[in-house]
Length: 525
Image (cartoon, rainbow, N blue to C red; front, side, top):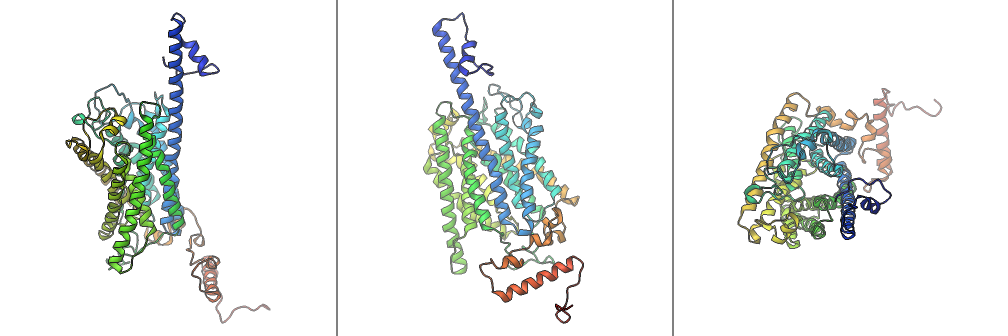
Protein backbone atom coordinates (compact mmCIF):
# COMPACT_ATOMS: atom_id res chain seq x y z
CA UNK A 1 0.00 0.00 0.00
CA UNK A 2 1.44 3.37 -1.02
CA UNK A 3 -0.22 6.62 -0.01
CA UNK A 4 0.98 9.57 -2.09
CA UNK A 5 -1.35 12.27 -0.76
CA UNK A 6 -2.62 12.87 2.73
CA UNK A 7 -5.73 14.97 3.13
CA UNK A 8 -6.41 14.01 6.73
CA UNK A 9 -4.85 15.56 9.78
CA UNK A 10 -2.15 12.89 10.20
CA UNK A 11 -0.38 10.06 8.43
CA UNK A 12 -2.06 7.63 10.81
CA UNK A 13 -5.56 8.75 9.88
CA UNK A 14 -4.74 8.69 6.16
CA UNK A 15 -3.35 5.17 6.37
CA UNK A 16 -6.26 4.02 8.53
CA UNK A 17 -8.81 5.32 6.05
CA UNK A 18 -7.00 3.67 3.13
CA UNK A 19 -7.05 0.19 4.72
CA UNK A 20 -9.35 -2.44 3.24
CA UNK A 21 -12.42 -2.62 5.53
CA UNK A 22 -13.20 -6.18 4.34
CA UNK A 23 -9.81 -7.52 5.47
CA UNK A 24 -9.20 -9.04 8.87
CA UNK A 25 -8.11 -6.81 11.71
CA UNK A 26 -4.61 -8.31 11.61
CA UNK A 27 -4.29 -7.65 7.89
CA UNK A 28 -5.62 -4.12 8.32
CA UNK A 29 -3.07 -3.46 11.08
CA UNK A 30 -0.26 -4.85 8.95
CA UNK A 31 -1.29 -2.68 5.99
CA UNK A 32 -1.49 0.41 8.22
CA UNK A 33 2.01 -0.19 9.59
CA UNK A 34 3.44 -0.62 6.09
CA UNK A 35 1.68 2.54 4.95
CA UNK A 36 3.01 4.59 7.88
CA UNK A 37 6.53 3.22 7.39
CA UNK A 38 6.56 4.06 3.68
CA UNK A 39 5.20 7.56 4.34
CA UNK A 40 7.83 8.27 6.97
CA UNK A 41 10.58 6.84 4.77
CA UNK A 42 9.56 9.06 1.87
CA UNK A 43 9.53 12.09 4.13
CA UNK A 44 12.97 11.28 5.53
CA UNK A 45 14.42 10.71 2.07
CA UNK A 46 12.93 13.97 0.81
CA UNK A 47 14.41 15.87 3.73
CA UNK A 48 17.74 14.15 3.16
CA UNK A 49 17.80 15.37 -0.44
CA UNK A 50 16.78 18.86 0.66
CA UNK A 51 19.74 18.89 3.04
CA UNK A 52 22.14 17.48 0.45
CA UNK A 53 20.93 19.81 -2.32
CA UNK A 54 21.39 22.81 -0.03
CA UNK A 55 24.98 21.83 0.71
CA UNK A 56 25.75 21.24 -2.96
CA UNK A 57 24.22 24.59 -3.90
CA UNK A 58 26.26 26.24 -1.14
CA UNK A 59 29.31 25.11 -3.10
CA UNK A 60 28.42 27.84 -5.60
CA UNK A 61 29.34 30.34 -2.89
CA UNK A 62 32.58 28.45 -2.32
CA UNK A 63 33.45 28.54 -6.02
CA UNK A 64 32.60 32.25 -6.14
CA UNK A 65 34.81 33.12 -3.16
CA UNK A 66 37.66 30.97 -4.43
CA UNK A 67 37.54 32.57 -7.88
CA UNK A 68 37.19 36.08 -6.48
CA UNK A 69 40.19 35.59 -4.22
CA UNK A 70 42.34 34.26 -7.07
CA UNK A 71 41.79 37.18 -9.47
CA UNK A 72 43.01 40.77 -9.38
CA UNK A 73 40.81 43.32 -7.64
CA UNK A 74 39.82 44.92 -10.95
CA UNK A 75 38.07 41.69 -12.04
CA UNK A 76 36.30 40.60 -8.85
CA UNK A 77 32.78 41.66 -9.83
CA UNK A 78 33.12 39.98 -13.21
CA UNK A 79 34.24 36.73 -11.62
CA UNK A 80 31.45 36.77 -9.03
CA UNK A 81 28.76 37.54 -11.60
CA UNK A 82 29.86 34.62 -13.77
CA UNK A 83 29.46 32.28 -10.81
CA UNK A 84 26.00 33.69 -10.16
CA UNK A 85 25.03 33.29 -13.81
CA UNK A 86 26.15 29.65 -13.67
CA UNK A 87 23.45 28.97 -11.10
CA UNK A 88 20.82 30.94 -13.03
CA UNK A 89 21.62 29.46 -16.45
CA UNK A 90 21.90 25.94 -15.01
CA UNK A 91 18.46 26.25 -13.40
CA UNK A 92 16.80 27.37 -16.64
CA UNK A 93 18.73 24.99 -18.90
CA UNK A 94 18.24 21.96 -16.68
CA UNK A 95 14.56 22.78 -16.15
CA UNK A 96 13.74 23.18 -19.83
CA UNK A 97 15.69 20.39 -21.55
CA UNK A 98 18.64 19.26 -19.42
CA UNK A 99 16.73 17.02 -17.02
CA UNK A 100 14.79 15.45 -19.89
CA UNK A 101 18.00 14.64 -21.76
CA UNK A 102 19.59 13.20 -18.61
CA UNK A 103 16.78 11.31 -16.87
CA UNK A 104 13.68 11.58 -19.08
CA UNK A 105 11.63 8.36 -19.10
CA UNK A 106 13.85 6.75 -16.45
CA UNK A 107 12.67 3.18 -15.73
CA UNK A 108 14.75 0.76 -13.65
CA UNK A 109 12.82 -2.23 -15.02
CA UNK A 110 13.26 -1.38 -18.71
CA UNK A 111 16.27 -3.12 -20.33
CA UNK A 112 16.28 -0.78 -23.34
CA UNK A 113 19.38 1.41 -23.73
CA UNK A 114 19.20 4.96 -25.09
CA UNK A 115 21.81 7.61 -25.82
CA UNK A 116 19.67 10.47 -24.55
CA UNK A 117 16.40 10.96 -22.68
CA UNK A 118 13.32 12.02 -24.65
CA UNK A 119 10.65 12.73 -21.99
CA UNK A 120 9.86 15.11 -19.11
CA UNK A 121 10.78 18.37 -20.85
CA UNK A 122 9.98 21.38 -18.64
CA UNK A 123 9.45 18.84 -15.81
CA UNK A 124 6.19 17.64 -17.36
CA UNK A 125 5.20 14.36 -15.75
CA UNK A 126 7.95 14.48 -13.10
CA UNK A 127 6.71 13.40 -9.66
CA UNK A 128 9.95 13.46 -7.68
CA UNK A 129 10.78 17.17 -7.88
CA UNK A 130 13.38 16.89 -5.15
CA UNK A 131 15.43 14.61 -7.38
CA UNK A 132 15.42 17.35 -10.02
CA UNK A 133 16.64 19.85 -7.43
CA UNK A 134 19.54 17.63 -6.41
CA UNK A 135 20.58 16.94 -9.99
CA UNK A 136 20.32 20.64 -10.90
CA UNK A 137 22.85 21.45 -8.19
CA UNK A 138 25.21 18.92 -9.77
CA UNK A 139 24.78 20.44 -13.23
CA UNK A 140 25.50 23.91 -11.84
CA UNK A 141 28.67 22.62 -10.14
CA UNK A 142 29.93 21.15 -13.41
CA UNK A 143 29.36 24.46 -15.21
CA UNK A 144 30.98 26.69 -12.60
CA UNK A 145 34.28 24.78 -12.75
CA UNK A 146 35.10 26.70 -15.91
CA UNK A 147 34.44 30.17 -14.43
CA UNK A 148 37.78 30.48 -12.65
CA UNK A 149 39.82 29.04 -15.50
CA UNK A 150 38.64 31.75 -17.92
CA UNK A 151 38.87 34.54 -15.36
CA UNK A 152 40.04 38.05 -16.28
CA UNK A 153 39.77 37.72 -20.07
CA UNK A 154 36.48 36.14 -21.21
CA UNK A 155 33.49 38.06 -22.57
CA UNK A 156 30.21 37.89 -20.69
CA UNK A 157 28.20 36.84 -23.76
CA UNK A 158 30.51 33.90 -24.39
CA UNK A 159 30.16 32.74 -20.81
CA UNK A 160 26.37 32.92 -20.93
CA UNK A 161 26.29 30.81 -24.10
CA UNK A 162 28.72 28.26 -22.69
CA UNK A 163 26.84 27.88 -19.40
CA UNK A 164 23.55 27.18 -21.16
CA UNK A 165 25.14 24.76 -23.63
CA UNK A 166 26.92 22.74 -20.96
CA UNK A 167 24.00 22.39 -18.54
CA UNK A 168 21.38 22.01 -21.27
CA UNK A 169 23.02 19.39 -23.47
CA UNK A 170 26.67 18.43 -22.90
CA UNK A 171 26.44 17.47 -19.23
CA UNK A 172 22.98 15.79 -19.47
CA UNK A 173 24.17 13.29 -22.09
CA UNK A 174 27.09 12.28 -19.85
CA UNK A 175 24.78 11.97 -16.84
CA UNK A 176 22.31 9.89 -18.86
CA UNK A 177 25.00 7.51 -20.12
CA UNK A 178 26.45 6.78 -16.67
CA UNK A 179 23.69 7.42 -14.12
CA UNK A 180 20.38 6.73 -15.88
CA UNK A 181 19.24 3.07 -15.89
CA UNK A 182 18.82 3.48 -19.66
CA UNK A 183 22.42 4.64 -20.07
CA UNK A 184 24.72 2.37 -22.05
CA UNK A 185 27.45 2.64 -19.40
CA UNK A 186 25.26 2.58 -16.29
CA UNK A 187 25.90 0.07 -13.52
CA UNK A 188 22.20 0.40 -12.56
CA UNK A 189 20.94 -0.81 -15.93
CA UNK A 190 19.04 -4.09 -16.18
CA UNK A 191 21.82 -5.39 -18.42
CA UNK A 192 24.93 -3.29 -17.61
CA UNK A 193 28.00 -3.14 -19.81
CA UNK A 194 29.78 -6.54 -19.63
CA UNK A 195 27.60 -7.37 -16.66
CA UNK A 196 29.33 -4.70 -14.53
CA UNK A 197 28.85 -1.19 -15.89
CA UNK A 198 30.58 2.01 -14.81
CA UNK A 199 30.65 2.94 -11.12
CA UNK A 200 30.75 6.66 -10.50
CA UNK A 201 29.14 7.09 -7.11
CA UNK A 202 29.00 10.91 -6.97
CA UNK A 203 30.50 12.22 -10.18
CA UNK A 204 34.28 12.10 -10.62
CA UNK A 205 33.69 11.64 -14.33
CA UNK A 206 30.12 12.90 -14.79
CA UNK A 207 30.62 16.24 -13.02
CA UNK A 208 34.31 16.96 -12.59
CA UNK A 209 35.85 15.40 -15.68
CA UNK A 210 33.13 17.00 -17.82
CA UNK A 211 33.73 20.45 -16.32
CA UNK A 212 37.51 20.09 -16.18
CA UNK A 213 37.93 18.95 -19.77
CA UNK A 214 35.68 21.79 -20.92
CA UNK A 215 37.89 24.19 -18.97
CA UNK A 216 41.00 22.86 -20.73
CA UNK A 217 39.47 23.32 -24.18
CA UNK A 218 38.16 26.79 -23.37
CA UNK A 219 41.35 28.18 -21.84
CA UNK A 220 43.54 26.73 -24.61
CA UNK A 221 41.46 28.45 -27.30
CA UNK A 222 41.04 31.61 -25.25
CA UNK A 223 44.78 32.03 -24.64
CA UNK A 224 46.64 33.26 -21.55
CA UNK A 225 46.13 36.56 -19.77
CA UNK A 226 48.08 39.55 -21.11
CA UNK A 227 51.62 39.47 -19.77
CA UNK A 228 51.37 36.00 -18.23
CA UNK A 229 53.58 34.12 -20.71
CA UNK A 230 54.20 36.68 -23.48
CA UNK A 231 55.15 40.34 -23.56
CA UNK A 232 53.13 43.05 -25.34
CA UNK A 233 54.78 42.11 -28.66
CA UNK A 234 53.88 38.43 -28.35
CA UNK A 235 57.43 37.29 -27.58
CA UNK A 236 57.57 34.44 -25.02
CA UNK A 237 58.91 35.47 -21.63
CA UNK A 238 61.85 33.62 -20.14
CA UNK A 239 59.91 33.18 -16.90
CA UNK A 240 56.11 33.31 -16.57
CA UNK A 241 54.76 36.29 -14.64
CA UNK A 242 52.73 35.39 -11.58
CA UNK A 243 49.34 37.07 -11.21
CA UNK A 244 48.69 36.67 -7.48
CA UNK A 245 45.10 36.84 -6.31
CA UNK A 246 44.06 39.83 -4.28
CA UNK A 247 42.76 37.89 -1.23
CA UNK A 248 44.16 34.72 0.28
CA UNK A 249 41.41 34.90 2.92
CA UNK A 250 38.67 34.62 0.28
CA UNK A 251 40.47 31.70 -1.34
CA UNK A 252 40.73 29.85 1.96
CA UNK A 253 37.14 30.57 2.93
CA UNK A 254 35.98 29.36 -0.48
CA UNK A 255 37.99 26.15 -0.13
CA UNK A 256 36.50 25.39 3.29
CA UNK A 257 32.96 26.04 2.01
CA UNK A 258 33.63 23.67 -0.88
CA UNK A 259 34.91 20.99 1.49
CA UNK A 260 31.83 21.47 3.67
CA UNK A 261 29.52 21.30 0.65
CA UNK A 262 31.20 18.12 -0.52
CA UNK A 263 29.58 16.23 2.36
CA UNK A 264 26.23 16.94 0.70
CA UNK A 265 27.68 16.28 -2.75
CA UNK A 266 28.91 12.79 -1.87
CA UNK A 267 26.52 11.60 0.84
CA UNK A 268 23.50 12.91 -1.08
CA UNK A 269 24.42 10.70 -4.00
CA UNK A 270 23.15 7.75 -1.96
CA UNK A 271 19.71 9.35 -2.69
CA UNK A 272 18.14 7.57 0.28
CA UNK A 273 18.89 6.91 3.94
CA UNK A 274 15.99 4.56 4.66
CA UNK A 275 16.79 1.58 2.43
CA UNK A 276 18.72 -1.54 3.46
CA UNK A 277 22.30 -0.78 4.55
CA UNK A 278 21.99 2.88 3.47
CA UNK A 279 23.20 4.10 6.86
CA UNK A 280 26.45 2.17 6.35
CA UNK A 281 26.89 3.58 2.85
CA UNK A 282 26.29 7.20 3.89
CA UNK A 283 28.62 6.90 6.90
CA UNK A 284 31.38 5.38 4.77
CA UNK A 285 31.01 8.15 2.18
CA UNK A 286 31.45 10.88 4.79
CA UNK A 287 34.53 9.22 6.30
CA UNK A 288 36.18 8.59 2.93
CA UNK A 289 35.50 12.17 1.82
CA UNK A 290 37.30 13.49 4.89
CA UNK A 291 40.29 11.17 4.66
CA UNK A 292 40.96 11.73 0.96
CA UNK A 293 40.89 15.52 1.31
CA UNK A 294 43.20 15.46 4.33
CA UNK A 295 45.63 13.03 2.71
CA UNK A 296 45.82 15.06 -0.51
CA UNK A 297 46.33 18.34 1.34
CA UNK A 298 49.24 17.08 3.44
CA UNK A 299 50.80 15.33 0.45
CA UNK A 300 50.67 18.47 -1.67
CA UNK A 301 52.09 20.62 1.11
CA UNK A 302 55.11 18.37 1.65
CA UNK A 303 55.73 17.60 -2.03
CA UNK A 304 55.53 21.27 -2.99
CA UNK A 305 57.92 22.23 -0.17
CA UNK A 306 60.44 19.67 -1.39
CA UNK A 307 60.05 20.78 -5.01
CA UNK A 308 60.53 24.47 -4.21
CA UNK A 309 63.52 23.64 -2.05
CA UNK A 310 65.17 21.70 -4.88
CA UNK A 311 64.62 24.59 -7.31
CA UNK A 312 65.38 27.63 -5.15
CA UNK A 313 67.39 26.18 -2.30
CA UNK A 314 64.79 27.20 0.27
CA UNK A 315 61.40 25.51 0.68
CA UNK A 316 58.12 27.24 1.42
CA UNK A 317 54.76 26.09 2.73
CA UNK A 318 52.38 27.33 0.03
CA UNK A 319 48.77 27.95 0.98
CA UNK A 320 47.30 27.90 -2.52
CA UNK A 321 48.93 24.59 -3.44
CA UNK A 322 47.80 22.93 -0.19
CA UNK A 323 44.29 24.27 -0.58
CA UNK A 324 43.98 23.03 -4.17
CA UNK A 325 45.50 19.72 -3.14
CA UNK A 326 42.64 19.24 -0.68
CA UNK A 327 40.13 20.03 -3.41
CA UNK A 328 41.88 17.59 -5.73
CA UNK A 329 41.54 14.90 -3.08
CA UNK A 330 37.82 15.63 -2.79
CA UNK A 331 37.41 15.32 -6.56
CA UNK A 332 39.34 12.05 -6.67
CA UNK A 333 37.27 10.35 -3.96
CA UNK A 334 33.94 11.50 -5.42
CA UNK A 335 33.61 8.55 -7.78
CA UNK A 336 34.61 5.85 -5.30
CA UNK A 337 33.55 7.26 -1.91
CA UNK A 338 30.79 4.67 -1.44
CA UNK A 339 32.66 1.58 -2.67
CA UNK A 340 36.19 1.72 -1.18
CA UNK A 341 37.58 1.13 2.29
CA UNK A 342 38.89 4.07 4.37
CA UNK A 343 42.52 3.01 3.93
CA UNK A 344 42.04 3.13 0.16
CA UNK A 345 40.65 6.67 0.46
CA UNK A 346 43.94 7.74 2.05
CA UNK A 347 45.90 6.27 -0.87
CA UNK A 348 43.58 7.84 -3.42
CA UNK A 349 44.05 11.22 -1.75
CA UNK A 350 47.83 10.76 -1.70
CA UNK A 351 47.96 10.15 -5.45
CA UNK A 352 45.53 13.02 -6.04
CA UNK A 353 47.84 15.48 -4.28
CA UNK A 354 50.77 14.47 -6.47
CA UNK A 355 48.60 14.46 -9.60
CA UNK A 356 47.45 18.00 -8.93
CA UNK A 357 50.98 19.26 -8.38
CA UNK A 358 52.42 17.61 -11.50
CA UNK A 359 49.59 18.80 -13.75
CA UNK A 360 49.75 22.34 -12.39
CA UNK A 361 53.46 22.60 -13.20
CA UNK A 362 52.91 20.97 -16.61
CA UNK A 363 50.27 23.55 -17.59
CA UNK A 364 52.71 26.37 -16.84
CA UNK A 365 55.36 24.67 -18.99
CA UNK A 366 52.86 24.36 -21.83
CA UNK A 367 51.88 28.03 -21.37
CA UNK A 368 48.26 27.19 -20.64
CA UNK A 369 46.87 29.79 -18.27
CA UNK A 370 44.52 28.39 -15.63
CA UNK A 371 43.79 31.23 -13.23
CA UNK A 372 42.52 29.00 -10.40
CA UNK A 373 44.11 25.61 -11.24
CA UNK A 374 40.70 24.12 -12.02
CA UNK A 375 42.13 21.82 -14.70
CA UNK A 376 44.55 19.91 -12.44
CA UNK A 377 41.99 19.85 -9.62
CA UNK A 378 38.95 18.71 -11.59
CA UNK A 379 40.10 17.18 -14.86
CA UNK A 380 43.23 15.33 -13.74
CA UNK A 381 41.74 14.10 -10.50
CA UNK A 382 38.42 13.39 -12.19
CA UNK A 383 40.32 10.95 -14.39
CA UNK A 384 42.24 9.52 -11.44
CA UNK A 385 39.10 9.22 -9.30
CA UNK A 386 37.28 7.30 -12.02
CA UNK A 387 40.27 5.04 -12.63
CA UNK A 388 40.74 4.39 -8.90
CA UNK A 389 37.35 2.70 -8.68
CA UNK A 390 38.69 -0.06 -10.90
CA UNK A 391 41.61 -0.55 -8.53
CA UNK A 392 40.18 -0.29 -5.02
CA UNK A 393 36.42 -1.05 -5.18
CA UNK A 394 35.63 -3.47 -2.34
CA UNK A 395 33.19 -6.42 -2.75
CA UNK A 396 31.04 -5.77 0.36
CA UNK A 397 30.99 -2.00 -0.25
CA UNK A 398 29.79 -2.44 -3.85
CA UNK A 399 27.18 -4.90 -2.62
CA UNK A 400 25.85 -2.37 -0.10
CA UNK A 401 25.84 0.53 -2.57
CA UNK A 402 24.70 -1.18 -5.80
CA UNK A 403 23.17 -4.48 -4.74
CA UNK A 404 25.60 -6.51 -6.85
CA UNK A 405 29.34 -7.07 -7.09
CA UNK A 406 29.89 -8.89 -10.39
CA UNK A 407 33.41 -7.50 -10.47
CA UNK A 408 35.51 -5.46 -8.06
CA UNK A 409 38.77 -3.53 -8.02
CA UNK A 410 41.88 -5.19 -9.40
CA UNK A 411 43.69 -4.81 -6.08
CA UNK A 412 40.70 -6.36 -4.30
CA UNK A 413 40.62 -9.55 -6.39
CA UNK A 414 38.80 -8.34 -9.51
CA UNK A 415 39.38 -9.67 -13.00
CA UNK A 416 39.81 -6.24 -14.63
CA UNK A 417 36.34 -5.91 -16.19
CA UNK A 418 35.37 -3.05 -13.87
CA UNK A 419 38.67 -1.29 -14.56
CA UNK A 420 38.08 -1.58 -18.31
CA UNK A 421 34.58 -0.13 -17.91
CA UNK A 422 36.03 2.79 -15.97
CA UNK A 423 38.60 3.48 -18.72
CA UNK A 424 35.86 3.43 -21.35
CA UNK A 425 33.86 5.99 -19.37
CA UNK A 426 36.91 8.29 -19.20
CA UNK A 427 37.42 8.05 -22.95
CA UNK A 428 33.72 8.60 -23.60
CA UNK A 429 33.53 11.77 -21.50
CA UNK A 430 36.70 13.22 -23.03
CA UNK A 431 35.55 12.40 -26.55
CA UNK A 432 32.01 13.70 -26.08
CA UNK A 433 33.14 16.99 -24.54
CA UNK A 434 35.82 17.51 -27.20
CA UNK A 435 33.43 16.80 -30.08
CA UNK A 436 30.98 19.43 -28.89
CA UNK A 437 32.97 22.08 -27.06
CA UNK A 438 35.91 22.45 -29.48
CA UNK A 439 33.64 23.57 -32.37
CA UNK A 440 31.55 25.60 -29.92
CA UNK A 441 34.45 27.69 -28.60
CA UNK A 442 36.07 27.89 -32.04
CA UNK A 443 32.87 29.39 -33.40
CA UNK A 444 32.71 31.94 -30.58
CA UNK A 445 36.34 32.81 -31.19
CA UNK A 446 35.78 33.18 -34.94
CA UNK A 447 32.86 35.52 -34.29
CA UNK A 448 34.99 37.62 -31.94
CA UNK A 449 32.73 36.80 -28.99
CA UNK A 450 35.14 34.79 -26.86
CA UNK A 451 37.92 37.05 -25.61
CA UNK A 452 37.67 40.56 -24.24
CA UNK A 453 39.48 43.46 -25.90
CA UNK A 454 43.06 44.10 -24.81
CA UNK A 455 42.25 47.51 -23.36
CA UNK A 456 39.36 46.04 -21.35
CA UNK A 457 41.62 43.34 -20.01
CA UNK A 458 44.25 45.86 -18.92
CA UNK A 459 41.78 48.29 -17.35
CA UNK A 460 39.78 45.51 -15.74
CA UNK A 461 36.59 43.76 -16.72
CA UNK A 462 34.74 45.34 -13.81
CA UNK A 463 35.25 48.77 -15.39
CA UNK A 464 34.29 47.54 -18.88
CA UNK A 465 31.27 45.35 -18.17
CA UNK A 466 29.91 46.40 -14.80
CA UNK A 467 30.23 50.16 -14.67
CA UNK A 468 32.71 50.26 -11.81
CA UNK A 469 34.75 53.40 -11.36
CA UNK A 470 38.46 52.88 -11.81
CA UNK A 471 39.22 53.96 -8.26
CA UNK A 472 36.88 51.20 -7.05
CA UNK A 473 39.09 48.58 -8.70
CA UNK A 474 42.48 49.92 -7.62
CA UNK A 475 44.78 47.60 -5.76
CA UNK A 476 45.63 48.04 -2.10
CA UNK A 477 48.97 49.61 -2.98
CA UNK A 478 47.34 52.09 -5.40
CA UNK A 479 44.64 53.34 -3.04
CA UNK A 480 46.06 56.00 -0.69
CA UNK A 481 43.51 55.59 2.08
CA UNK A 482 44.25 51.87 2.23
CA UNK A 483 47.99 52.47 2.25
CA UNK A 484 47.77 53.21 5.98
CA UNK A 485 46.54 49.66 6.56
CA UNK A 486 49.15 48.08 4.31
CA UNK A 487 51.45 45.90 6.45
CA UNK A 488 54.50 46.97 4.45
CA UNK A 489 53.69 50.72 4.36
CA UNK A 490 56.61 53.12 3.98
CA UNK A 491 55.42 55.93 6.27
CA UNK A 492 53.96 59.38 5.83
CA UNK A 493 56.23 60.49 3.01
CA UNK A 494 55.16 57.61 0.77
CA UNK A 495 51.56 58.12 1.84
CA UNK A 496 51.61 61.78 0.76
CA UNK A 497 53.14 60.86 -2.58
CA UNK A 498 50.42 58.28 -3.17
CA UNK A 499 47.70 60.77 -2.25
CA UNK A 500 49.11 63.35 -4.67
CA UNK A 501 49.35 60.79 -7.47
CA UNK A 502 45.83 59.61 -6.79
CA UNK A 503 44.39 63.14 -6.83
CA UNK A 504 46.14 63.99 -10.09
CA UNK A 505 44.78 60.85 -11.72
CA UNK A 506 41.26 61.62 -10.47
CA UNK A 507 41.42 65.18 -11.85
CA UNK A 508 42.64 63.97 -15.23
CA UNK A 509 39.84 61.42 -15.51
CA UNK A 510 37.25 64.09 -14.63
CA UNK A 511 38.58 66.41 -17.37
CA UNK A 512 40.32 68.87 -15.04
CA UNK A 513 44.01 69.78 -15.21
CA UNK A 514 45.97 69.17 -12.02
CA UNK A 515 47.88 72.13 -10.65
CA UNK A 516 51.67 71.99 -10.95
CA UNK A 517 53.99 72.54 -8.01
CA UNK A 518 55.13 75.92 -9.39
CA UNK A 519 51.73 77.58 -9.57
CA UNK A 520 49.96 75.94 -6.67
CA UNK A 521 47.22 78.20 -5.36
CA UNK A 522 47.69 79.73 -1.96
CA UNK A 523 45.10 80.03 0.72
CA UNK A 524 44.65 83.75 -0.14
CA UNK A 525 43.71 82.90 -3.73
